[in-house]
Image (cartoon, rainbow, N blue to C red; front, side, top):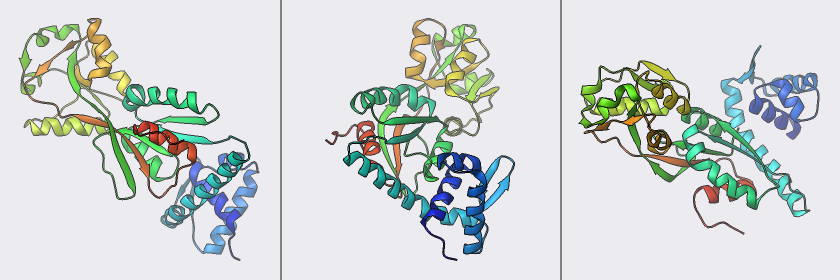
Length: 299
């Protein structure tokens, strides 16, 4: 048996959603039909494509290889259908965007407001991940654009554009006000409890390297999962921590926290727009990319 496009289309959706039932819902068919198609495709290709579990499915090594070719082809065909509908006067484009919380709150939302005013017919799906997770979703073809913060590794298939620099500062709650009266060496603060992002995040790795450059080892007292959780924990006097200056400014002005100035210079970071060269963008996604990158918008 020779597998046709329909088999690969179904394979694309199952791999994308990592779930037979969700793929069936997206394709407006039944889960047993999807399962049957995938069994037939595996038999035709002579290898297993999925590892099944109660939580869903994951791709085998062979499945990953196949998906790397199938995903761009399917996305291009889907985009072709969207372009045809657009030329016939229909507007049903959908853009999937992945972003870190820092990038979302200080950059993405402002641009999305302008984008929505210009393209009200386009549906936007916004997903919140940390930087490594966002890049993985982009490489897997599950999102169209990634808005993330440095540092990160960018391979040859990805295009990254820096769009906004930002600086981090060290802050503490009212209990640590005495440390905000002068300038300190980082080593002088080692005895204070440190609040950080989770060890799986880029932000954790960034400050771990910063401590290393100062000849110190970073030893968090509390790790939190999201950037918007850091300030409340600090404001409750549970420790000191590094936060983006832009996010800290309102709390500083209200006197909820104090800045602890350091002799050591904290390196600048950037918000970046990342796309995958292997996955062509729809016309609407390209317009959003132009706006995010600060380029002249195409008409």
